[in-house]
Length: 136
Image (cartoon, rainbow, N blue to C red; front, top):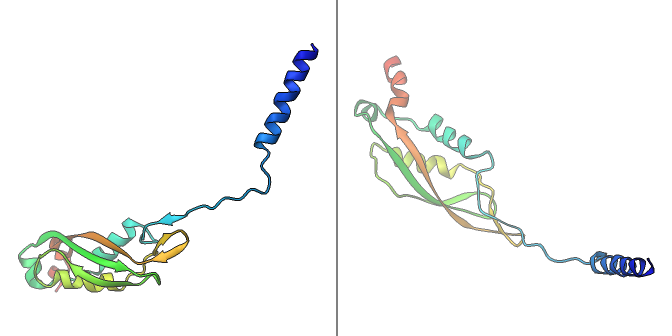
C-alpha cells in the first residue's frame, strides 16, 4: 500500500510541476484577410441595388459578371480599382465607381494593418430593372 501511495504522490507532484505553468506568456500571431464587414450578401445587395442600367442595356437584355480588382488600404479605404471584364453599356465603370465608395476591414498580419488586393465578381442582369423601364 505504501508503494501505491508513493507512486501516486510522485505522479501527482510531477503533474503539478509539469503543467502548473504560471506567468509563462508566449506570442500569438493574429492574421486576417481583408473583408467586407457587413458580409458577402450585403456586398452583393449593395451592387444589386445601386447599379443603374441604361435603356439600351435593358433593351439588349445584357447579362454577365463584372469582375473588378482593387486594393484595400490600411485605413479601410479602397483604391486602384481596375475592371477585369467587359460587359459594355458603362456597367463596369458603374461597378468600379460603387467599389470606390466601399469601406473594407483591412488585412492584418501580426497585429499590423497592411494593404491587400481583392477580386470580386458582381452579377449583372438587366432584367432586374425591367420594371423600372416599363414605369418610364
